[in-house]
Image (cartoon, rainbow, N blue to C red; front, side, top):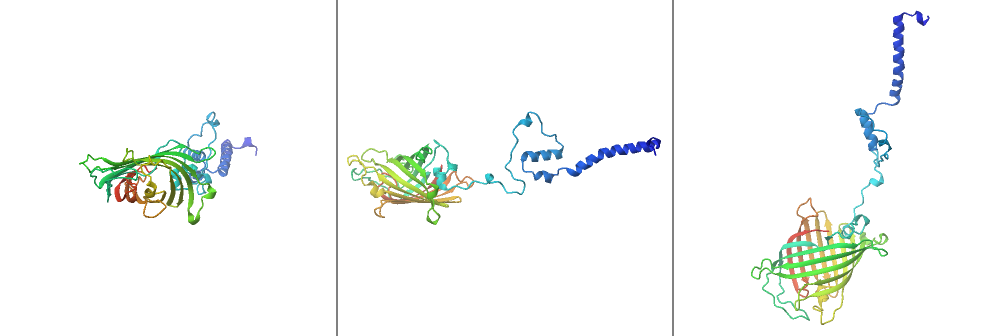
Length: 368
């Protein structure tokens, strides 16, 4: 039947159906080929910029602006899709040992030059008790000097700092450090004699530290040779004759570690002086030439054991032990309780040839 002879109402209805079909079919086809995004679909997208755009499309937000903003560098992402393994670049760095952190041996521990950090232990011991007081210090070249009526109860403190002067020295490698240590015995409970300082020792040093090559670190039983050091040191009690005591020395040392344990060894070679100016010619026979220290650091506790020896017999030298624990558990590098015990010769330079045993209790700070 010709189209123009169909009832006008039927013809109008047919036209409307045709128009709606023409509009609906493309939309239906698009819906079948590109389903609308869901939250799960967006969550699986790795790149943050693409994931955000997906969420924006669900929320009905406008697309990102074009033009000058579109010319900015495209965002990149190293993040893996949900459930996938992280790339190697996102893996955490391996933990370095205590000796590397202390001497900044590995590249990840380097902190540059002229940063002041701790060296020898920094501590204040308000309670320090010794079994004997040297009431007449003397040496082969210095006459005995009678001391005031010092008490065996006193305070002891030590301040020790170092800073790196040169890092990765050209040609030879390694770092150069400067250090200074001051130790004092304070008769704070001796009001009769106006609370004097019984002894104060001063020690400046220059130290060269070289990390061991990776190929030479491994040692038996899981130990590692971490560094070698060479130093030049002067120590003096700052007194005039006949109480003056001092010595100059060079030393060679090395450091080793295994897990929470570290071990350091050092040999001291005293620089000769003329007999006329040497206040203590027999110092190394008492105080020692060799120094060996074992340190344990696990969890919040640390402990150390220092042995000094003349290398000529066990009757000389000294043993010193220390233990620390943080006052506040959430601040392990802050203020720590400190207990120190000593027995042998040379707790102070004035007492280099005087044997005594002492115990001190207090706090330590500025670890390194």
